[in-house]
Structures are given as structure tokens and as C-alpha cells.
Length: 177
Image 1: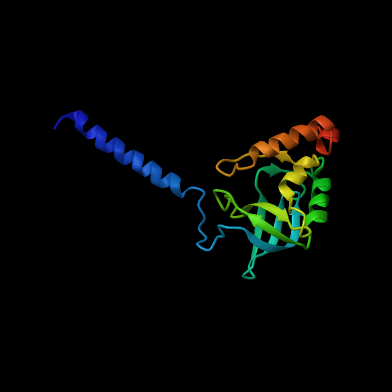
Image 2: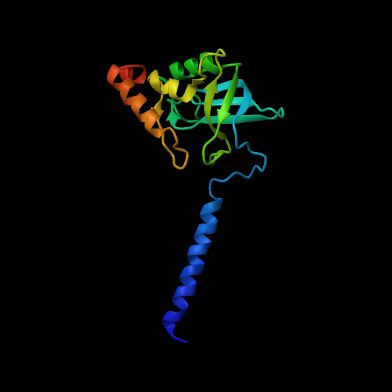
């Protein structure tokens, strides 16, 4: 057998192993993870971009907002960052104790086992729900944080962040970014 004849099958086997491993990365170990929109009750606002919710079946889960990042207020070994308390307070006023709708993107959980979601706050029957992730960026209280493949609203968030920066709103007006 020629020496080169073994290379092709080994290369194919290596590619298949890499594909199998990469398909498992980021996928949930929770067989009951939601795939469609879910209505949940906010039980605790952790910080500007993270909440704890009670899911429809009664279980509790932590939700990290997709596509945005707010300054830290509760991260261990990290000082409270400029704008963090304001982002936390705004998030608390928006969703604290309320019913929200969670919508998901390509990957349902992050490496910390938090649900990853776009969070919507229902309003009156005639009004569209408030897109909380976008509202925090619009107010200048959050930066964009795009982590593919959960990037469905990346261009919207970038546009809102640019507008907030140009207007000097929130973080953009008082924090060194």
C-alpha cells in the first residue's frame, strides 16, 4: 500500500471527529430547554444584563441577555464599574417582578449554564412589546456584545449603540469607554 493512500482516510476521520466535537460545543445538556418563546416571571434582577426567572413549569433559571453587556456590579473580584448601578437600576425598573417573554437564538445556553435570551416586556394590547435588550442599548446603559451564532440583532444593537454614543447618553456621557 502506498504511503499517501492512508492520508486521505485519516484526514477524513480527523475532519469527522472535529465536526462531531464542534457540533456538541455550546449545545445544551438540558433536553427540556425551550426552543420557542416562553413567558416567565422575573424573580430577581441580578445586574444590568442578567435576571433570574420562574419558568412556566415552576423551575427557576438565570437568563443572560443576548447581544449586550452592561458594566459589572456583582462579578466576584471585580470592582463596581462606571454605569453599572445605573444599568442595574434601569433593568430593575423595566422588568423587576414582571412577566417577560423570552425569545431564543441559535444556542440556548452559555458556558455558565445560563439561558441566553432576547427579553421582551409585554405592554398594552395595542402596543408592541418593549425589546429590553435594545432599550438598554438605546439608553446608553449597555454596549454591544456579539457572540455568534447568537447574533440575530447585532446590526440593530450596533446602530442603537452608535446613536447613544453620538448623543452622549448613559455610559457614553460619563464613563471612559
